[in-house]
Figure 1: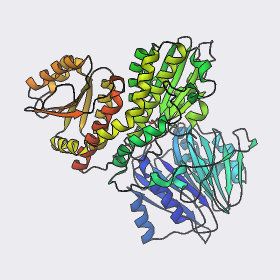
Figure 2: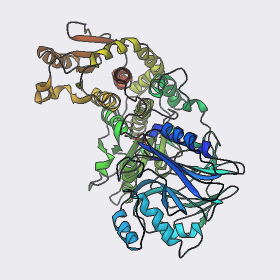
Figure 3: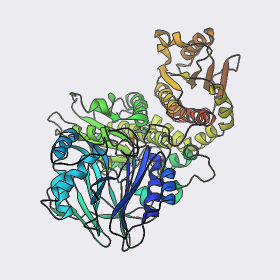
Figure 4: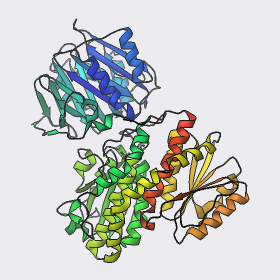
Length: 616
Ligand code: G6P
């Protein structure tokens, strides 16, 4: 989704801005632009539809240099992806703005501003901000003062950065609903929507909080709350290795991230397992006391994280005996929910910034426990500095490291590990989990990285199978029990990166409709661990074969499934049934990856999609 980079320095910062945009490319976007205050004291910009490389080419053809500037990658919401809609947006030649988020009252503001004589040159909601600010500057000469007043008139979500030709020593920023971070340098300072954009220039960051307005100069940073009160925000050192920004030996970030899974799963387990039990304090010092009171769990998430939550529901009910509900955040946040007493609200998110999930958490915190509210909130998240982590009572950080590929892979498997730890911790504290079973699962978790490595070793076999999809336009994914959400995640991966239509069904639902679609043009992918549902699943597969459907079955080596005409069986390492969803995810990720490579799509940045969806 949209990305922001800004800088104020003593040197030409064009390269810093462009490199920052490149680092944000993974988030998904459709146009890019940069505006600088030139040595002549005028604002100038370059904007291009398409990749940052197009913008770079434009900058090579017509260079721009300056010591104060802002840059943006845009993911279109209001107005088509076009050069005139790309940011930065100007008001006259004095002011430039870049913006992430959505201004909901933009139509009303546009009318008012047109009435005041402002001429709009784009279809964006963002352009209203820059003209509104220009108008406010007529009454409040100082840029920070004007911004404080102007943002009060904006409804919706924004992370924005502003520069002015008249006040050339400062970069202004405001945050409400879209994250912003200040990068602290020596005699120069930076701004971005994600610290990854600034890792090449600094490792010290200051995170803006909701409502904050910041004035960033070369050698100072001043921050005010929404009420205009000056505040200090802590500066933190970022320790993540530089590894993430580099594909290494891999052709795509997605493949690199798939292969990182044994290591990051290992990291997610580190320090969280005792000899035969889960360490409950891994969820925070007050976790044991809180978990003892939990009688229900409500999970809320989006996309791949939602699928992780769906798997967790099977675990929580089966292992910990806790009733669990799960819902996508975009639905949950607008629904009148009846909260059962002593319900733990659990959100799951890779980024920790997904707008709907964050809004759902905020709604959940509206009412106090005992007065129709939740007992407490817990987040399973990959970014320790994110809004969801800061606003939740408890958190468990998945240690996946930065995930660059838009299609989520290692974040999903580490979320599953986190959710298994949560299930065991809740079961342990509430005394509903058999101690021997907990010890067995702890043992199995320790062996999980090795099992994941074995599954990855099947890469070449899966690559061969991917050829079956080269000419196909549709596919079905089937699973039963906790493998149903795994099938959903497999189908999501395939559609996200190969653009092949893929639908997932619980295998038992096949006869209630989807069977009508099955013919030799519709490959059917199935995950078949060796559990009590295996025989039922085998019957479902017969139903597919009888209609000429081609089957791809990822089956436990002990499941007794054989290759045959129209049936391609890939034998999977044997694993404890409760951990099978984590293992069976791997071949489905590899399958979608290889199909996408065959199709020649943009694997790491699939069309129309964004890594972190910070708008509704
Ligand atoms: C976007 C991403 C998905 C991700 C979803 C939820 O759609 O492309 O990969 O699963 O957002 O994101 P979150 O950061 O909350 O897990």
